Amino acid sequence: MKPVGSVSEVFRVALRLGLTSFGGPVAHLGYFRREYVERRRWVDEITFADLVALCQSLPGPASSQLGIAIGTRRAGVLGGIAAWLGFTLPSAIVLGLVAGLAAASGPAESGLVHGLKLAAVAVVAQAVWAMARTLAPDRPRRALALGAVIVTLAWTDPIAQIAIIGGGALLGRTLLATPAVTRTGHEPSPVSRRVGVGALIAFVALLAGLPLLRVATGSADVAFFAAFFRAGALTFGGGHVVLPLLHGTVVISGWVSNDRFLAGYGAAQAMPGPLFAFAAYLGAAASGPSGGPLGATIAIVGIFLPSFLLVFGALPFWDALRGAAGFRRALAGTNAAVVGILAAALFNPVATSAIHGPIDVLVAATALGLLVVGKVPPILVVGLSAMLGVLIG
Image 1: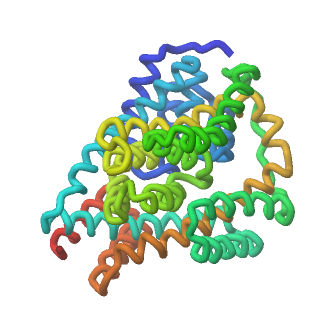
Image 2: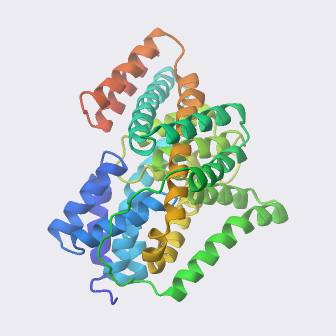
C-alpha cells in the first residue's frame, strides 16, 4: 500500500503520545486507539485490531511495535522510525538524566532510591497478578508458570531465561489446546515480502552474530549493544518481563549495581511512553561500557532494533502466521512461562533487595493497594513511595 501522510506529521502525533501516555502498555493501546482510530482515522477498527494482535504475538514492547506499524502504514519506513522516536524520546531523555541522580550518595538520595525500589515491588506485583489472570487462566498454563518459577529461582545463569522461554514454547506447542483466534479483515502490507525477508534475516544474523563479534573484538560497547539487542529480541509478555532478563545481564556483569538498577526501574514507572525506555537509564548509568549519553544511545538502539526488524519482517506474512495452530499453542506456552519468570523476579531480586523490615512491607503494600484497589495512576504511587523513602531514610 502507498503511504498517505508525511514523516513530520507522524512524528508530531507520536511525540504528543510520548509526552502524555502514562499507565503502561495496556493503557498505551487505549491512547493509540483514541488518537489513530477515533480522532485521526489513520486506521479503521479492524486494521487496528489486526495490528494489535500482530504486535502482541511478537517479542518486544507491543505498544512501541504498534506505533511503528501504524507509522509505517502512514508514511513508509521513515514514518515507522518517526513514530518510534516521538513515542520514545521523552521518557528516554528523562530517564537518562535520572541516572545521574541515582548515582548520588547522600541520605536524602539514598532514601529516594529506596523509595523507588519499594515502588518497583508494588508495580511488579501488580503486573504479575494481571498477567497471570490473562496469560495463565487455566490449570495447564498455571502449572507451566509454576514450573518456570521453580527453574528460574534454581537456575540463576542469564541463559536460563532464554531456555525457559524456549521450553515454554515447546511444551505449549506439544501439550496445550489451540487458543481461538478472531479473524479480522485483510489489509495490504505496507512492507514488501522482499523487505520482510531481509528484515528477518538481519534479525537472525544479529541475534547469532553479535555474541561472536563481541568475542572477536573484545569491545565492551559491542558486548553492551549485544546484551540489549538480546533483551529486545527475547522478551515476551510485555515491558515488565524485560526486568529479569536485563537484571541477569547488566547487574551480574557489573555494569550497573543492583540498587541503581531497581531504583531506575521504579523511576521508569513514573514516565510516559514505553517501559523499554528504561534501557536509556541503564546505558547512562553503566560503569563498564561508555556510559553517559553514548551508553544511553547504544542501549536504547540495541533494545528497540529487534522491534523494527520483527515488525517489518512479520507484516507481509501475518495472515499465514496467525492462522497456524502450532504457532498459537507455542505462543500460549511462552506467555505462561514469562509469567513464571516475572513472578520469580518479584521475589528475587525485587523484593529481597527492597524490603528489609516491617516499615518497608507497609510502604510496598500501601503502594500495591493504591495501584490495584484505588486505581491511582502509577506516577502518583511512585512519587509517594519516593517521598516515603526519603522520610524513612
